[in-house]
Image 1 (cartoon, rainbow over the protein chains, first blue to last red):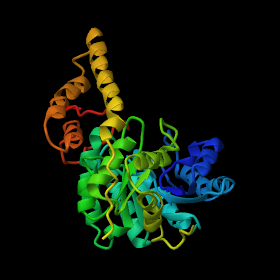
Image 2: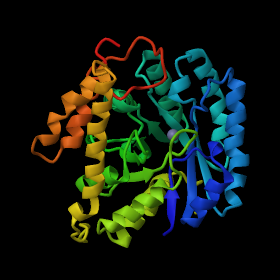
Image 3: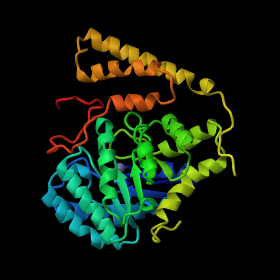
Image 4: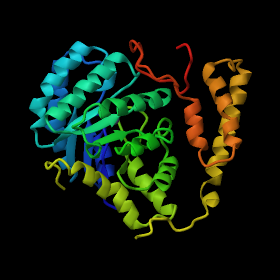
Length: 266
Length: 93
Ligand SMILES: [Zn+2]
């Protein structure tokens, strides 16, 4: 089965992971900018990271026949320092011109602090000014419910931002309803412990339908599984879903969302 | 209109053993924590408070359990002092 991995942090994965994903049918990877596991000491550290995401990483993916796209931002885990965040945001417009950049992401909240919210609003404004797609990270565990509400409110304050052009990722049973009701796209992340298992993600699809929703592995440097997405597809088939349905969820939906940026081609 | 519903499969056949194993893991976790005298941890209390939600009728047990483990407040916090999350909300954290 061919599929798209719409959220993966390949800078922290090996070439063996690329090979396994290619063998499983992966055609496209989309890689949002994220926290590297340590706080970068200056905006220059982000400049280097953005250069990696727009230069070397697509070359690494291409060796396995996979197209690589990416998203630019300073993630919420490093957004408590608003001065640094502003300096990083000032770097982003230059990178938005690169061939494999699809938009602003993954922005959002982590601990739901005032500074994180201020930096989130600056990113939404940047997306608005440059007419960019937005990929949103919602907080972890006990912080997710409150953070998702704050994020939806912040997005709604920008009247030019249309819900079709925003995906709110890492939804779970208690947040998917508010994201869908507000008209946004929803992303479901498959993790062994936190976020969703494949079983629960498929339950959500069966309850909420398969429009404007995708699944991803969000594999990174933590406990995560680069093949979580195709494994969920296999489980969906076991649960009686048709090949056509699998194609919609794992290929056509991410393609439809990302194709809103004309740089996205397969 | 196209019918999107899956073919009927026996979901109990498919997932009963997985659910059984997870239930035993949870029971064994509580036994272990009790043996170690760590039952007063707020995260353990949060799990115990969520347990009755399992036996309530209704199609939204998972959602209700997640809600019971969530921060119910609505105002942004003044400042983030940590990056991580614990999985249960501590009222005076
Ligand atoms: Zn991510």
